[in-house]
Amino acid sequence: MPIQKLDHSPYDYEFNVRGKHVTTNLHFLNKILKRMLKGYSPIICICGGQRNGKSFIAVWISYLVMKAFSKRIDWNKNAVYDPIETTRKITSLSEEIFMLDEASSSFHKREWFKRINIAFSKIIITQGRKTLCYIFVSPFVNDIDKSFTKHFDFIVRVQTRGNIKVFKVMKRFDSMLENRTTYQIHQDDVKVFMKDVPKKLWEDYNDFSNKEKDRIERLLTQEFKVRNAEEKIKDIKSVLRSV
Image (cartoon, rainbow, N blue to C red):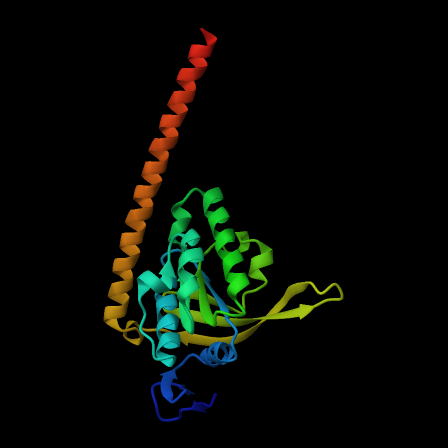
């Protein structure tokens, strides 16, 4: 896949994917698209502090990948907030992005990690044959099971709002054939501006995000009420048995 360095342009690079020209300042996009064109599914982890704009960076990368493959983003299809929905949504996708955002961490922590592990199990199983670009957005990377994080290909660290550093995760196979992360190679140091993402796409994502957060909140409230009711029933039964 030809990559051209642009000297007289506000962008640094131009990619040519099946006749589609994509201009960007993101050099590691070349590595993402190359892997997808070869039939592999790269996994990108976007991490950083709260309110630093991780989701915005995820939307930006999603936009560039989908644009390269001449596809439009449908957030109801290409993104989830509840990890458990991963098992249902990724079955129909190919040569697209699939973004798993962090908002479902509003679940009880134990419940959230149970769901995220189920999601990653599905992602790892399909990684070599679905030709998707998986984007995982979370500040809790260190808490994710190492059997999953070792599959990450790139880590995008959001330093401050709009400022990112990109690292390629280098791996090796030891004598026991156990894949272990050894070190990270610095790839990009980029400033991202609001104008880099189409306004309508960002607005659509916020609408999707708010609806999902409201839905999860209702789910949590309902679950709490059910658990509360069950606890009350248990209390009543214990009192009756003691009489």
